[in-house]
Length: 481
Image 1 (tube, rainbow, N blue to C red):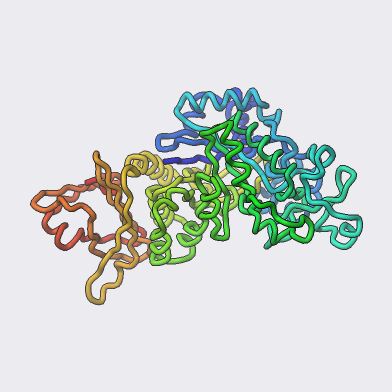
Image 2 (image 1 turned 90 degrees about the horizontal axis):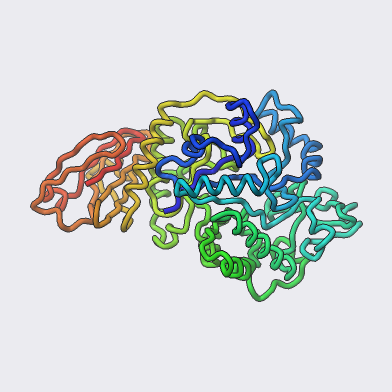
């Protein structure tokens, strides 16, 4: 199963350059560094932000006081030299020369491949930079405006390339100030998107599509119908993805997705879609809510991306500190589907730098957390094999604490595993009905792969009553039977 490690490429290379006392680009990252970003239990590296950033977008960002406030909050000593512009304001899908250019990326991909790793890169389908070549060479790819629009709503439109264009947006928030909206209903845009993704597929093994749901016919139509007319008969992604896969059959498609559109996007061709609902339930809701979420069809769940943080979310060490964060990490690491880890998460970083910055503050390493993740990642890789089955804990009498426990099994011909997580800050006890029907008459031994603790149990009791589990608040078991 896919396990992704997201790297903020610009910040990462800057810190490597400081560490080694020389400029480090993608083409000359030391081998031991590649080893560290592809640890056991990870099979895919996402180099976030490699494409050429927009000077025009940077100028807009530098004039945006709200952005500048966010920069100072994350990096109090920020200077203008620290502001590189947004990696999601792409001027061209060519690796930025300062990062090593196309040759540097090819060398990085080879280093990852030598370690059995795949490479994922970004695609931003909903918008382009205000100095992107399409503004002059392919205006039909973009949503147009008028001079009256610019006067009436200057925050919604921008004059660039000799024309008035709509700024990129989603339907629930104000427009992004530094980007231009594409027209998802345009044949020209669809063909240009296919060509862009084919080019990315020439350079990588997968693509993470930013805000992928914004291009779906119904979403795009609700946002832009007054300007783009009638939707084509075929939806955007069912048109694009098969044409890209005709050139790159094994290209992994990952969608950033929200608004409960994960299922439709899976059906439209994506291998995996963000599971933001699980993230929010682990942060803000209880075990019953998480358990209901995990009752969805297993084939749907295999197409989700489980995460506790990424470059758009607050750091997990800040929102889920201590044992609570470790419990949540055990959950996301051992569920079906893809798993996404964010660079710095293993060390307990608490500050999420805006993606505009090329530098982040120094933070102390949480050695206990780093040791925990060093155990968890390879453990999860060994667990997630075979058939996954969620369990329903049961309790007795007035002890309702069983409802705080989350539990599931993985059953493979070579091994059986049980995961139990106490999704609360209070002790909890439960009986867990195990799905294995051959335990009767046997002595059974369970070993916790995270702690080394060993538990001997009678197979008859397990068959008749289930396994009794008692865990402290935020406690976990990852048991190999």
